[in-house]
Image 1 (cartoon, rainbow, N blue to C red):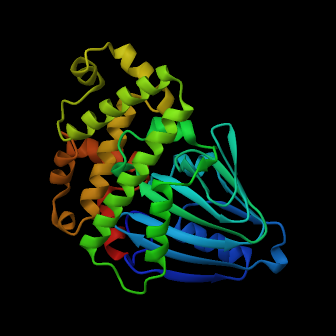
Image 2 (image 1 turned 120 degrees about the horizontal axis):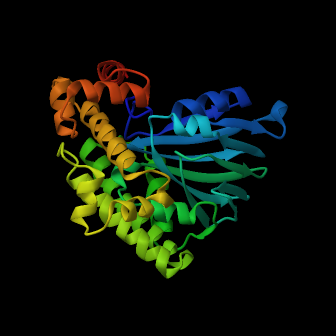
Length: 322
């Protein structure tokens, strides 16, 4: 495993043959996220998976019997890996539930959800599907649209189908993608997915909500652009956008995070990114803290430990060991 929580080997697919629910549970927790995995017929469980990491993202195609996976609230809230997850139905059918909604997916449909919130997926016998995990740090401003679409079955034509086809090709190619090609693929996939999410969000959101979501996206992007500035506070953000502090906090209600929490989470995610890079492994933690917007290295260490349960130095050492 690498520091992001994804498999250490990137750019080449791994094929998994899973002959028990226990093996499925173990590999799910190793390659994806901490999930509760259950099967209707555990005694005859057989599943296969093709898994590949590219950049900071992960794609997989899975064939499973009748199963259910649950992302518990405790696991979602205390995980240091934050992703938006896409799910394409290829064969059979599935039910995807998050945020009080449940989408019934047929072949050709897809859904999107947030791994920092609890969710549940039930798949039929002989179901086959593809999943994609995109790091939330690479998707600024997506949260309102994703939360509006979570638990819905979406039309897979257009950009979603193009992304799925590209990922299917990567999963069946034995050649290992060079790092620069991985980054290019991640950027291209992210751009296409963003277009699809924006299109579907407009169709499922009332105009006032859409306007608020667009404004929130602009604010989140602005925060990320100014993240390294120690003086970045909710008050400064509100001033920059000509709004009151209360209006700013009301705008963030739908994202289930306060502006202050968003800034803190983004800074910690930036620190993780820096420490996970080859060049970042040689940087002093004080420099990491400064580049992430923490004026005080001690405050950075305390905040990091409170969020991830370990010191920044220990986290970086774990990532270096793989």
